[in-house]
Image 1 (spheres, rainbow, N blue to C red):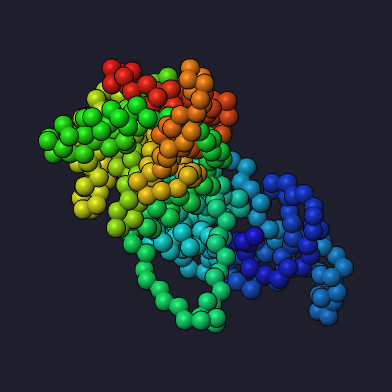
Image 2: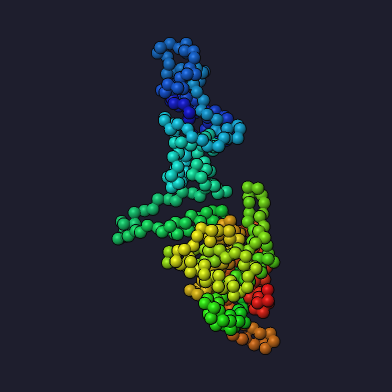
Length: 385
C-alpha cells in the first residue's frame, strides 16, 4: 500500500491474516528522510544521544518522530480523479491498470486514484481516456507466454484491427456473462421447399433467398413472444431493460475476420426484403465498407454456420445482449411419422441458443427453442406473419 510520507518502517501493527478496518493504523514510520514530512516534527525527544536506536526498538511513544500510514479507505466518497503533480509520488496502480493505461495512452502520473487508499482503478483510467468503464470486475492479467522459439521455428504477424476488436469484445463478454447453451433441432423440410420455390424470383430481383432470411423472421417472431430474450441487464441499477424494437446482428465471415452488422426492425419486414437487405449489408462487410453505426444497437444475434458445416456449436453472447442463436448444417434424418406409422426422410436443422443465465432460466430457453422450431416447421405461418 502506498504511504504519503517517507521514512523507515519502525513497527508493524498487524499480522498476516488480520482483518483490517478502514482507517486502522497498520504501521508506524520513523526517521523520515524527505523534507516535507518533517514539518509535523515539533518537539525533540528527550532521549540521550546514544539511546536513540534502542528506544525506537522498545518504545513506540516517541510520537513526534512517528507517522502512521494513511487510512486504508477514505471515510467519505472519493472525488473524481484529477490531475496531480508527478514529481516524487509513487503510482499506486496494479500491473493490469498500468497495461490498460499504456494501451489507452493515459499518463498515470497525472491521476489521483479513487480506489482504496488512493489506488488508481480501471474506471479512473477509462474516464481519463474519455471512455466508460464496464461494469463488473477486472479480468485477471494474462500470464506471460513462454519462448516458443526454444522448441522450433516460429513466425509472427500483427493482429488486424478487426481481430483486436473481436478479442476485446469476446473477452469482455466472457467475463461479464455467465453463459449456458441449449441445443435443439427443427424439421425444415417444408421450409426448404418454400425457399427453393421463391429462390428464382429473388434472383431475378438481384439477390439470393437464403435460409438466414427465414431465420431472421422466425427469430423476430419468437422474440416478440419471449421479450426477455430481447432485453439487457443493468446490474448497477438492478433493472431489466426491455427493448420495444428488434434489431438482429448477423455474423458475417469476411477475409478480415468476423463482423456482425445489424439489420433493424426485423419484425416489420417480410422475408424477401430481409433477404435483400441481408445481401447488401453482407457485401458491405466483406468490402470493409461498414460504418460504425452499422454494427451498433443490436438486441439479439444470429450466427449461421450451416453453409460451412458442423453439427453444433456454442456461440458467445454479444454483450450487452442476453442471447444468441447458432445454426449448423442441416441433414436428412429418419423421423417417425405417426400417421404413416413409419420412419420418413426429413431435412433437420440443428441449432443452439446461448443465453445469459442471470436473466434467463433453462426452462425459458427450452420454450424459446421449441417456439422457434414450431415457426420454422410451419412455413405458411411464417410467410403470413
